[in-house]
Length: 286
Image (spheres, helix red, strand yellow):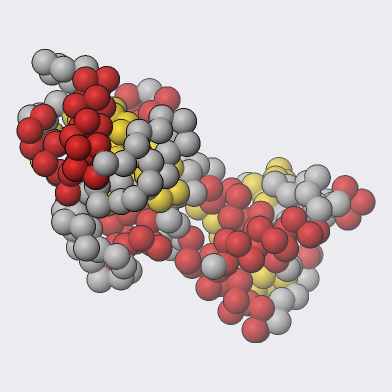
């Protein structure tokens, strides 16, 4: 087992926001990560380093939870050390017990006596000397990543993808009409864009309600879900007014069967095929 002591979290479009909005989104993302970790009984300290979020610890149980936190583009368990190249080299060598070709990739922020290319050459040469593996900058079998941030350095050899998008509950709250899997998937798409949701079940049997609820709970890191059941589509107006929602999200994907309402309606699945919806639902359910 590698001596990981931190987890390096990367986000995407949050970095494009104004300073004020970015700060708010980063705060929300950290809160959602904390919520996700507590769900598996982990209580690591989490801090923000410009352009990255650092979790002060690593546990295998965190992997599946972090993959479901909206706003995370990718994350890597890593070794934390200083930006001194001797320490960086020592940590990189600790992660280089692989076989096959490799490449060293370095991202660097701050002022140092070396460039990112210098780091890649020096660390790459040290790994070649230790492992006798070949360097392949095109399609390497292994990658050693080095993220240097001022006086700190984070070294990793694996990265895991997150769902991307925006942190949950940064874009207001919308009502989601759920009649089948397509309604659940439409809810997922607006959650990925940062919207909190109020799921409204209409003519869904108890077993499906349980399955759909578990699906949404699994992705709702940091957000409380309030499930509502209605008996008829005629009850939508009253339900939305009671919950102060002005936007309705539906799972309609065929323009012939669009649900017409008096509210602003989003239909994230329009244009998709039924087979695509089924496949994506199964993928996200895992």
